[in-house]
Length: 207
Image 1 (cartoon, helix red, strand yellow):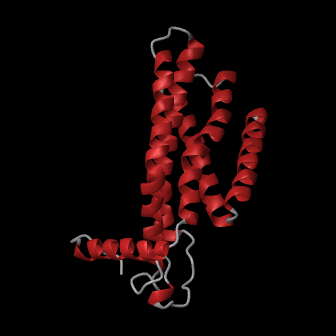
Image 2 (cartoon, helix red, strand yellow):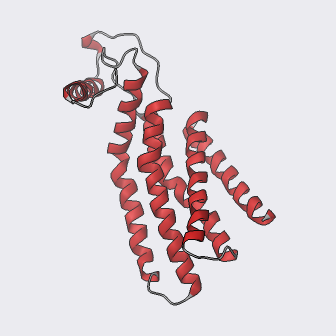
Image 3 (cartoon, one colour):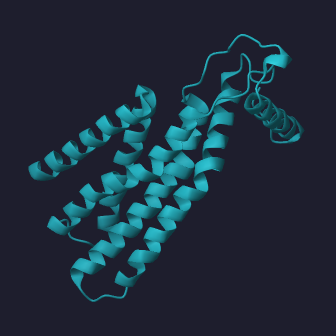
């Protein structure tokens, strides 16, 4: 178990350093790192429920999972950080609306790419499913877990967490309409459309 803790710990530390360098945001790095650790915890449970022995093969997949699952979460988190809500009355002074807008844009922009990456990986390992080799069977079962749990963290867990406690930009000074660039005008138009949808929705509860 000492070797397991050492290998997993070093892998998590390496992922943390890479994430803090890429995102430049400590809270987001912590959230993504915790989601990756959670994927590893799910894999430990999967070993038990699929009657797999925790041996060297399982350890290799546990360590590999840290590097693979970061791909599903890091893209969503990075897009969340890059997204800036329009500087209009609907978002000004309302952090909840800003977070929700950023989370929705992150999913809409990167969701398809992340899904295609995970689905193509799943298709690639399906060939191992019918194997009688113990090594191939372990790899198949654990990689299915890595893909499903990793995508679940990237698609469901992180966006929800970001929509509640994610970082957001402070309000900028209002600009005159003539100073708005084409990109800002486009974002403001999209935000106004989103605001109308939220206000007309019977389930809208964010104030």
